[in-house]
Image (tube, rainbow, N blue to C red; front, side, top):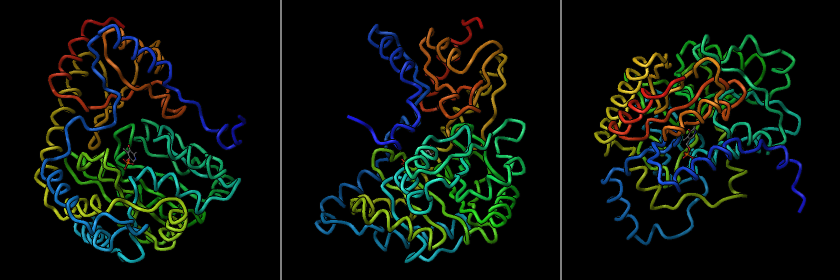
Length: 385
Ligand SMILES: *Cc1c(COP(=O)(O)O)cnc(C)c1O
């Protein structure tokens, strides 16, 4: 069977070989410490599960949902945005429920990118920005995220011929995979750049609540940002609800309505019981659980950063997310170093899987217990590089 061209141009799955090795080691009974998983290890907080059980019993939740999300959810999101970020949103036009933020990110370019339009995509980055661009037959232009620029794209390095032909820029701070955060100053530069070149800015804020000190800002809080911006959010990481599939998009009304036009033709919204549970969580009913989760991640980060430093590594210290982005030792590539770590049963993600500029790095996910992180550090001590 012949695939369509747009499918053929999707990048190949880079981790196939590593996955195979991981499976082989597992079958041999090796005790693997898997630091490659971008999914919280701890369960969804119990109060959320109990609320869901209650909603499940209510027949009003058993029918087709509205594609744009329950009005109560959109209202709650608007209130949360005001409280958390100081951004005012109109729940009737500027908020939309998503079946996880990945769904919204994947559909968004279909609404705004014409074949041949450039899309500015961070590299390294979450693979969906590139894939959704290709599915809309746009052309990804990769913006390198370099350590010397604190993993922010250097806007002045984007050729103006490209910027002029670009329709959309994706950004993601706090960042997967680097763990970097962005300042309001950087966002201000983005607003100016986007207005100069008539660009839409799509900001992925999935990790906004997994911070350790200062709460990361919303792009939309910058003056003028709502004229050009959309922000994608998720309950997956904040509330450890990855399997539940709920997120939301907020921002410019025309951008939200364009995304909605695609979605009305593709899906039928999020299960209402999940929406009602999600809005209850966003009302602050599990804030204590979120604080505990932040503290657990901060302890894991400190443990791993300090342990790696003692071993002579120099990890970028993230202020948010559950990732550590680590330069590989001299003489290794991302993949060869990941393979080296497999020798002692440690699984990490090669940075090259997130784009060319991820080469020379690995991503460590802090999604295992402190005991397992200590065990990983012990195993590293016995490795010779
Ligand atoms: C995990 C993650 C998401 C969230 O995806 P959901 O579909 O909401 O579960 C979005 N963006 C990035 C960068 C992520 O790492």
